[in-house]
Image (cartoon, rainbow, N blue to C red; front, top):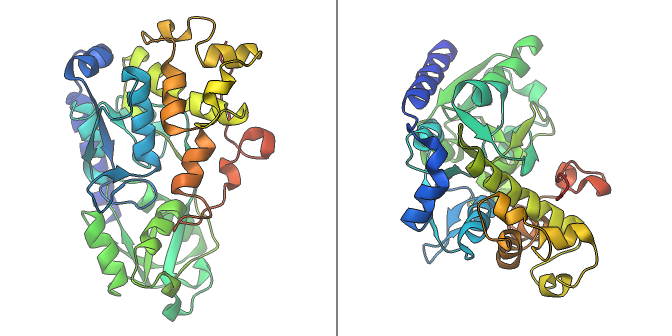
Amino acid sequence: MFSKLVAFGLAAAAFSVFAAPASAQATLEGVRKRGKVLCGVSPTAPGFSYADDKGVRQGFDADVCRAVSAAVFGTPDKVDFVPLNTNVRFQGLQSGEVDLLSRQTTATFSRDASLGLDFAPVVFYDGQGLMVSTKLGVKSAAELSQSAVCILPGTTTLQNLEDYFKPRNIKYEAVVFENPDEWRNAFFSGRCDVITTDRSDLASVRAIANDPKQYVILPETISKEPLAPVVRQNDSNWRDIVSWTVNALIAAEEYGITKGNIDEQLKSKDPEVQRLLGVNGDLGKMLNLDNKWAYNAIKQLGNYGELFERHLGEKTPLGLTRGPNQLWNKGGLIYSPPFR
């Protein structure tokens, strides 16, 4: 089964490369002509991407897309969200179905080097975990021998599982599901003993269970999963727009700039804040955008910390702490290059 899934992944990669648009350099031009950003997101991932009771797309990843819209158009509302399952997300980007993938996607060597993709800065440092029902009585991954594990295709999940379990001589059965709904329902119904994906996604899965207290995420983190937005290769301008929009949200938190105080911050004497907010300099023009591009993104969506706490933080159903997703000057890994 493992070899078949690897072959499937390679075939998908080849399709992605050959399906790439001939003029990838024209993404910004196409976005402006269309009047909206087409953003690939998870169909259902509470906290990251989900439709609320009014059908409006919510979540951390969705707001990254809105920030890009605000940077390009001055408003966060010029986005069409395109739900993409894991096994078709890269094809959707390469074929031009979407301009941007903001979808809990791990940056890896092979994806960056062989799929015709470029990754923007990491927006969430994660790691793969394992979740079980409390009824199983398991407290550690070491106790999972002979278990059935629910996984999705087109992800790094199976490779990570094999890399972790094989040297520990833990035997398991991988049960593959084509879409997230089947995957979650199979676990909740008891068809699988274990469900595995990024720990943040496990928190999303648990949040929509009938009784979240019936499920426990085991303590082991079996991989590194730096999650980042993705764009097509060979379009440095569009890559820079997405990357520096993310960096602007991060820098805003570092400099104490929020949705609520950003207009007051326009009076700041700090040269970097002045450049970031477009008071001085021509950083926007270097991106072929208005010099208020970063101001518009922060004003409309807030800084990185505001996005995190609004969708993922301890007061949300996911209840995540910042951990490695704290700013670098507070012991975390989140860091923006200078705006100069």
